[in-house]
Each structure stands twice: as C-alpha cells, then as structure tokens.
Image 1: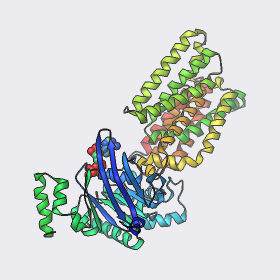
Image 2 (image 1 turned 135 degrees about the vertical axis):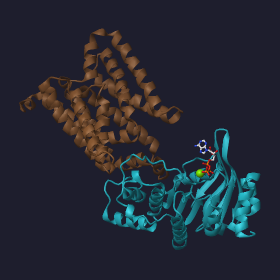
Image 3 (image 1 turned 60 degrees about the vertical axis):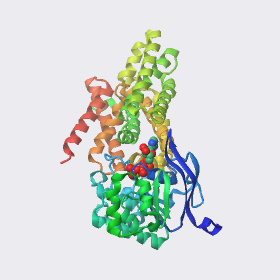
Image 4 (image 1 turned 90 degrees about the horizontal axis):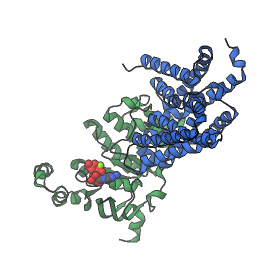
Length: 258
Length: 265
Ligand SMILES: Nc1ncnc2c1ncn2[C@@H]1O[C@H](COP(=O)(O)OP(=O)(O)OP(=O)(O)O)[C@@H](O)[C@H]1O
Ligand SMILES: [Mg+2]
C-alpha cells in the first residue's frame, strides 16, 4: 500500500482484537476504508459487527491492535465529526423529551435548555430529510419504533458528519421509508464526500447501495467491492451451516450468478 | 395567622426549606429519571451513621454526616459500576451497613438517643445557622456546576449517545451521587432522615405528570417543592405536627392530584 492510500484512509484497523473476558468478539481484523466510501458490514448474529463499530467510536477499547479514524485514535477524535445511530437505543422511554430536543442534542452534544432559532431551522431540515418534520414537537416517549429510528437518523445527520455510523438503520422503517433512507444515505455520501459505515442483514441492500462490503464473523472473511465480498464463498464461510443453504440459493438465484 | 413568620426560627426554617426545595427540585428529576429513587432513601439512612458518629464524638453531626454520606454515595456508585450487582442491591448493602454502624455508635453513648430522634423525624426548631450555611454552600456548588446540566441530562436520556459524544458519563455519575448526598444531608434537620428522600422524588414525580420537556420538569419540581414547603411549615406550626411529615404529606397530595388530572388517556 503506498502513502497516497494511507493519507486517503478514513478508517484504519490493524490487527484489531476485542475480547470480553475469555470470549473474543473480534480477532485480528485489519482493513483500510478509503474516504468517501459507503461500507456495508454483514455477518451473522454475534459476529462482532456492533463491537467493530463501537471500537471505531471509542465506546469499546481494543484488547490488541490499532484503530485510526481520520489518522487519530478514537479517544482523540472530535466526536462532532461522527453521526451515530445505535442498534439498541438505550434511551429512557419515560424521559420527557420532544423530538426536536433529541435532534438538537446532536448539534450541541448536550441536552438543550431551549432551542435557538438557527438551531430550530437546522433541526427542521434534518427531520425533513428523513420524512419526519411532522414529529418535531411530539414526545419521544410515545413514538413507534420506525418513528424513533427516523428521529435518531435526523439526529445523526444534523451535525453534517464526516463519518456516518449506522447500526442496522433500516430496523422498523417501512418499505417506502427504506427506499427513501437509502436514497438519503447515497445522496449524502455523494454530495458531502462523507464516509458511511452501515451494518445490515439485508444483502440485497448491501449489494445495491454500498461501494464496499465487510463480511465478518469474528474474523474478517471478506472486504472489497460488493461483487467480490458478497461472493457465495465468503457468505458460506461467514454464515456456514447447511441450514442457510436455502437462503443462499434464494439470494443468488434472484440476482443471477455473481 | 401569618404572624408566625415573624418568629426568627420560623424565618430560618422557611429559608432552609426554600433552599431545599430549590436543590431537591433541581436534582430530583435526575434521581427520578435515572431510576435512583431508592438512592435518596439509601443515602438518608447512610447519613444516620454519620450523625450518630458525630453525636458519639461530640461534634456537630452535620460536619461528620457530610463526608460520611458522600463516601456512602461514592461507594454505592462504585459498586454499581464495577461489580455485577444492580443499583438497588448496592444501595441496600451500603445503607444497611451505615445504619448498623449508627446503631452501634448510639448504643455506646445512650444519652444522645433523644437527639438522634430529632434527626430521624426532623424539627423546625433544630435548624440553626450552620445548616443554613451548609445549604448555601451546596447551592453555590450547584450554581458552579450549572453548565453540566446539558450533559447530565443528555446522559440521563441516552447514555450511549452521550458516551459516543465523549461525555464523561462515569465521572458524572459520581458527581451527581455526590451532590445528591449533600442535598440529603443539608435537608435532614428540617425534614428528617426518614422522609428526606421523598423531597427528591415526589415533587419531581409530580412535575413529570404535566411536563413535556426535562427543563419543564425541573422547573415544575422546584415550584412543587416551594409550594409544599411554605404551606407545610404553616400547617406544621398551626397543627403542631412535625414539619417534615407535613411537607411530605402535601407533596404526596400534589402528586396524586397531578396524576389524576394529567393521567394518560
Ligand atoms: N459488553 C460486552 N460484554 C460481554 N460480551 C459482549 C459485550 N458486547 C458484545 N459481547 C459479545 O460479543 C459478541 C459479538 O457481539 P456484537 O453485538 O458485536 O454482535 P453483532 O454482530 O452486532 O450481532 P447482531 O447481529 O445480533 O447485532 C457476542 O457474542 C456478544 O455476546
Ligand atoms: Mg449488533
């Protein structure tokens, strides 16, 4: 790898290993994500996908190996460069909060006492982008799963992040909304030059929307352009068992030979 | 009817009560939304150990109860974060420990048992200058930490998001537990250790019924606290009942009314 590639890297992992006690969720993962890539991460449940992005966010410390995000270790990185949507929301459902406050927290990195006029404008734009402008003044505690997901997406995008990290963002979003969401993600990636990292269980979506795919099962099974990484060989290696035979044939049958 | 407010000790009690309403109204919503309601009562019982130690040593109990309760608060937070036991189990262990310690101290010096009772139930007459100063210092510290409101609230709403945004959530847990322990101790003379937790919980829980935002909930909790203190002290004098009990009964009434009026359809 030459130096130009090194400088262009948005994320660099070198021999990343993450263990929780005896059990290692990630082992010896090395890869380089270039700037402006739209990366889909696929792998079975428990493969370490969420652990991987939490390590990139600095929420989980590596047991061994190195993580560099925009050439910095995660703990030194300015968090306002990153827009994050977690898989499991740890929010307190009984907390009195309006959607616009939640989105504004993405601007301030703190909870707003009151929202200024310029903030409200940006919050409104962010909510409109995810088709949720009508939710602005509503209480978060009553939201449906998909509504909440949209507000979290708006919160991630309101700060115009250089790196967007999404853990199963399509969860709970309806079919039309999902198409809109991928349009938003692709549009944002193209217009802002930001790097996107998205965990998904939808191979079709990964295939059609991403520029790179990471296939993970504790170890890195495959990494590269979708056609190559989503090969039958990689997927078999990641998802293994005969029980998945049907799913594999369905997926590859529909798409034709890869 | 209002001439009682000319009495110096009533003015002291009123001032102490208003400071408390302010402090408890500010921290109460954090306590309630973080699921720490039990922490307040645990810390109050913890303070009992400090009070007993103070009586035993023959020094102003307040000066011993402050560091003692703060240590209990830090111990509970540590146990919650570094061991696999849950928050209320940690509270249960620590408060039983300091209660037991307090009982031992009191049994060693029996002549102070009646004074210890006034700490358990609270009394208007017991409030002195030291208590007012202590409350003022806690208020001063709170004002200094006002800029932390945004990140405390952020982490209360969604801890992982705050963590991803590099809010020092662990440090803030300790800081909040420490401040709550101070509020408990400065409030104990007026309300009594047995009821002081109610002050942190009930006004906030009442305000939650009508608030759509957290800032609104804090404001509501302060107002509910102020109203219950003023009316409670008045009733306490007129009916000759303990101030703490009068205030807490009013707060409960307020909560029930709020719950009935604003109940979910
Ligand atoms: N904080 C933790 N402590 C202990 N074990 C953990 C922790 N976080 C994750 N693990 C373990 O690490 C493994 C990988 O978890 P992770 O959440 O990264 O999986 P995932 O690929 O995101 O799965 P899913 O598709 O179900 O979301 C799992 O076996 C999980 O039990
Ligand atoms: Mg996951």
